[in-house]
Amino acid sequence: MLIGEYRHSIDAKKRLSLPAKFRKEIGGQVVVTRGFDTCLYIYPLKEWSRVTEKLRGLSMGQRDQRGVNRFMLGGAVEADVDALGRILVPDFLKTFARLSNKVVLVGVNDHVEIWDEKTWNAYRTRIEKKADELAEKLGEIGAI
Image (cartoon, rainbow, N blue to C red; front, side):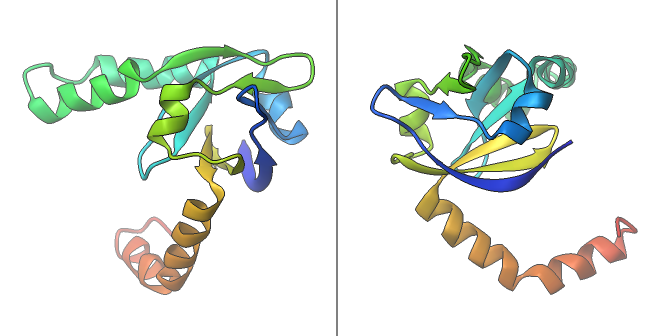
């Protein structure tokens, strides 16, 4: 399970070092793609396979479902994890997520999210203020 929050930097060559804790679960190759909320998602290949199976099941006859397929798959790239645990973040993905050199990597169960540090801080503050409200909604549907 990928969990935790880690602060890292993207170097001048657009390489991002993955936290050692994540490297064990991620393996030697990952898929990096556009994520929701202006961040990027990193999937281990095994998890990416599950995501693509779910996307494959969406109807191409439905505009929103076509859009999700294009968003996730069209923005996806395979990346090798080098011997130092780094991946290359392509320019178009870096631009999409508005990443500066300071980023936050967040483990979210089956994937890792890459956030610009300022964007993450604002998002986290907003979510933390709504924690009680979110807990009530999840309690109503029996999720917690």
